[in-house]
Image 1: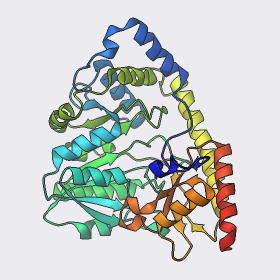
Image 2: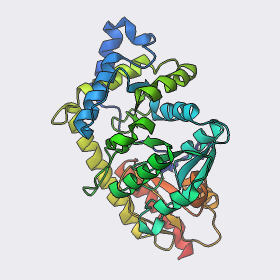
Image 3: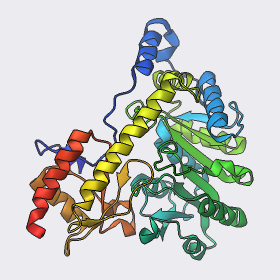
Image 4: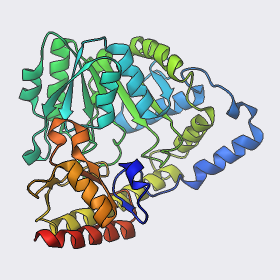
Length: 379
């Protein structure tokens, strides 16, 4: 869709998951200073990442989740959460292994399983219950070939935030069957309406089988810097690092220094980083309200579940005869609004489109004006 959209002038994007905010000045200024005075900033770092950054990650983990981790053995820095998930999949999955994936689910997770020569096994979420996990569905999907499960929480593309009860139930299944769990928690900070975020890393018994993956892209608006990290047992980290070395050697050193500056400015109270995160969440919450308000006016086109996290909503298409690709193409060429077809997010994604509310409030209003005008013909 982005390639097609690049050829259509004047489009507004509700497609790709990129917030409109720039990387904050305190990060950029630290990198500029480093470029001037730190010769090491343009060289390889240690394979698992800068020691100072791994220590900062461990402090942040303790601060936000109350979990103590060993920065030398249980953390490695990656080229974004995407790379550490891909490296993790390539480490734990062998040809023919089955991986349980909620559906709909972030499309790249599906591709990462296929890249590792695994077999995605989709477990539908319960849409009418706010995209709730179907625990019995996971149990029914188990076979002798099941090797792992993937959990994205808060979730892309639905904006769902899974409950502690359901996540503990999933962990129980994993422990019973000795399954690996790949947890994508890139949006762990981005929840609304006082919704609690429960991390699977909070379950000590799961540690030996958990690959918990995080990103600086969303929290600090650093999507282009490509830096994230994995928290896992030393046994898992040791093996994943072998794949990481083959993929990338190390995360970009300049980006690691940017991430270090971000964490050094975030003390859990009133650092520049803390203020930035609070302002970011507040702004995105306002944009969520705009998005939901405008979708309420389009009930002849869509029905939807209110998102409680991340910056996506996954409305169901209410127009008969429209596939998700059909609708996304019509909106692109006729309304000049970019959306993402739901068919790319697993089998139950069809019949939906993904909308991102990371755009500015003005862009959101204008995009929905266009969709509303386009939709008059179907009233």
